[in-house]
Length: 499
Image (cartoon, rainbow, N blue to C red; front, side, top):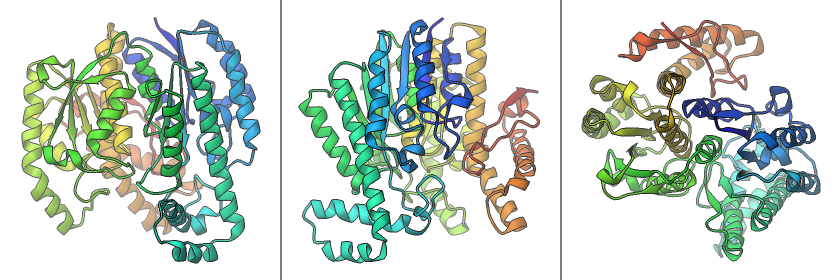
């Protein structure tokens, strides 16, 4: 059995549990660090202890998959909030030179995001007051560098944002850029078989996009275009690289769009058309796109981004407008998926019409016409890149399953995706937030309500799950298993058990 190590981006299930479940599908063993060595939300990991653990595990493994954010800073949030000097972070990366020589070493790092929100949950504390203005400031600095006449707007923001916060914001960006440049240098020296430099929550303008362009120039100068990939993404990368480490040959994908003309739409939090997102994720996982369906091992069925470019608005007018546009194409799409499955084709369904949840118009048609248990993969969570990368990983892993345990893991993860992405993200999440707001005036659970909130989610999920064809007759959410990993409703985790 293949055995390899993952140093995850952070401790959330999407970065730890998902890659492990996908490895189980492929009958592989993915080793992750003990929980006590990883970050805990805003508390960074013990990087030195983590590096020691890695060096102890590496000799018996066939591949290493390394988050440089975790090794250098102590995790994703730590990369945005800690005060350690760049020299300390770089010294940790230098220790990777001492690792045993393995057949595969894949590394990944994230260009720090600049969220457009006055919210400091994952950012420095001043973001709660100045986040939106710093986001705008970042965009204007980039536009100014392109020669646009925005000096007056920049001056206005500089008068509004305290200089101490502006300087701290820029120093943190400089530190992240130095670490990314160092990662490129290590790649140029052959330390990694593959390096992914991803960009989290991207937009066409902003310091993150400008830094990405600078890094890409060095990537090209160093002739690293084959061994260093750059594209929007973050939380799906562990899954993608875990599967890439298992491949012996490049898988072939045929891509089909439910609404062909919408393949050119840009999904929220990304910087290019969804067709480009698909191409990037397929390249990252080590695959190729083919032009004819008959040539493909996998069919990637894409429900492309909606016209509204945001989460679905359930107000009557907005919902009716979306239904009028999407109902007929979704019916035809579901029929096509059913036809492929009857022909025993491996179908990977990527539902990226809306961020953070399934398309209800597709779900209505899908459960009416398709036995979803026959899908190779399904995804509809968070960004388009997150969804597509994770679904590709599961789809490939399903083709590598050779045991009853692998087949069981495939059915478990597939059911988990529908319960989380459809039932929770597109239904129960709004319901529980409304319930909390009615009780406390806030849509998030206070610590003393956490147990009651998880029980509410469990009950609501099981009620909705019981109504789903095939899945509802097979699975239920295990009692007492619902967890909110970061004590907020945005992410949920739970265990499924057979009825």
